[in-house]
Amino acid sequence: MESRQWQVGDVRITKIVERESRIPAGGPGLPGASLEELHAIDWLVPQWMDENDAFTTSVHSLLVETPDGRRIVVDTGIGNDKPRRIPSWNRMSTDFLERFERVWPRESVDIVLCTHLHVDHVGWNTMLVDGAWVPTFPNARHCFVRSEYEHWRVEAESPSGGYSDWANDMIDGVSVFRDSVEPVADAGLVTFVEADASITPDVRLMPTAGHTPGHVSVVIESRGERAVVAGDLFHFAAQIARPEWSSSLDHDPRESAVTRRAFLTEMAETGSLVFGSHLNGPTAGRIVPDGAGFVFRT
Ligand SMILES: [Zn+2]
Image: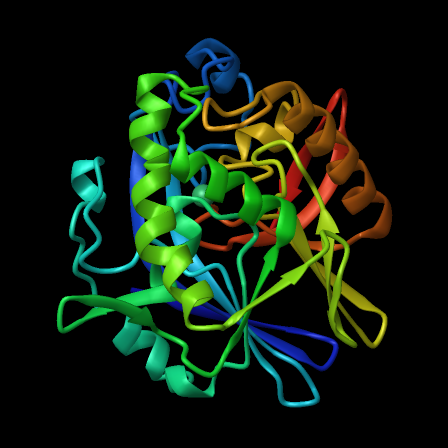
């Protein structure tokens, strides 16, 4: 499995892929997008949509090393051994952690940032040891946005059922909170932060609610260069072309569409290097205005 590296000023970013897959386009993942409309976006094929009309997608972590030597993990994937309703994610077993540790020993991580607390962004917060979920990064401050944590804590106690069955199975909120979020809080490793918090002199959060109530993007600025990890503001590159297309996993699809357009407009204006949290291959690129939408230039 590939890993890629970028330099943003004095900050180094390394991608460790946990899993890449293909998802049929024109299906429940992006309900507003018909195949006909997708075919009209000529830059999607072959990188972001293949010849068989499947979106290419990735789950990965970004390892961010700042000039003051801080080691930050942005999003921690699905994890191993977790009981999940989605068959391909159920009790997964990958060599993700081995590959991660070729870059950094897990004990050396200082900070874990989760753009939001969904199943594929918190998984490696914990690992299974002697039948118990223990923190994978025992020396890291896990910075969770307070409103996001509160939302999922309440959801885990009494699920609101506000999603379709398909989305509920994907999100699996109760199990995820119990095995991948609560154990790090119980271990005293969580620092609650606001959605616009500064994390280090070079790294800060940017509120981008919609996909989840406390969803954030991560802004990295160093020596006049700027990179932004989008999180799940978009799952597929097609949503850059058509920002009005929201995912059926979005908590508030209308808010997500408004946030996505504002975000893409700002990224285009600032020439930021944008990292897609589920974009495979090149993963990062610039946003360029194109008619009513945008193009992703890698
Ligand atoms: Zn995700």
